[in-house]
Length: 372
Ligand code: IPM
Ligand code: MG
Figure 1 (cartoon, rainbow, N blue to C red):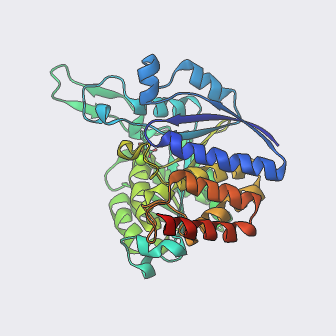
Figure 2: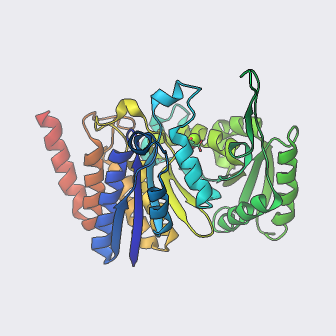
């Protein structure tokens, strides 16, 4: 298969982790005889520095003329600590999601057996957790009208949803549940918010088209608690933009590190793949950033084009790297000297040589730990 992939590394650790995902995709292309072509664009704080615009026209053009987008991360503390900043890196990502019509953000959450001890939650609570969060991505409070009064003392953000916006992601969530454990949990705040009541109404109607799938409802406050109390009760979680943003970060605690969580943002025409973590500027260029979320986002990209065997071998490589402690310090309980690029190289090597890589890397790894 021939794919043109737009790469937007962005800020902070974005470029380092994205570079590992590219290594892995190149190994897949070689091994499975595909042709992946990568073209780079700038976005976020770095794009503001270069052009004054967090999403330059050129970058948007590049994405619109590619088969998929591989995104790193954006954000810089100089904007976080300045509430009066008119231009912010995050606007680049939000505008990109909106312009490409990426309405469904899919965030898989999994507890890896080899990392059960890394989570602050108890093993028996998280073991076996496998959740797919369907977060609506182009509506709600993120995109409703915003206002700030002239005296600067009153502000508002409107949360708006239309039936159509709810319908399209709901169908995707139910379809996905059909090939999973056949359960959808709608997370909302229907006891308080009108927009949530519309979600309940529309989702309940659509659920009739999927009689095999069980539909459950949870208020978001309760869902936040249930997620760490009994995460195994969930299969597909369907929710609006802001709730999905919050509970997916919370859910990352189950996996042991936010550095492991990948995501796919899908629309009718375009698709973008990105880790759920931010730009973590304190860690930039130190070789400590976990590239797994970006590498797993690349696997989701391959899934999107029905390259299932190719995606699977990446996931297997990831599991093996975690098992052998070829992982960055955020999840490594054994060694603290495995760098971002070493993890990428291991998985790259696994793809070209799934049988031998175990041996090679155990040896290299042991050698390394005795040298240092
Ligand atoms: C995410 C991020 C973004 C969001 C930010 C960077 C705008 O937190 O993708 O979860 O809030 O959607
Ligand atoms: Mg977030």
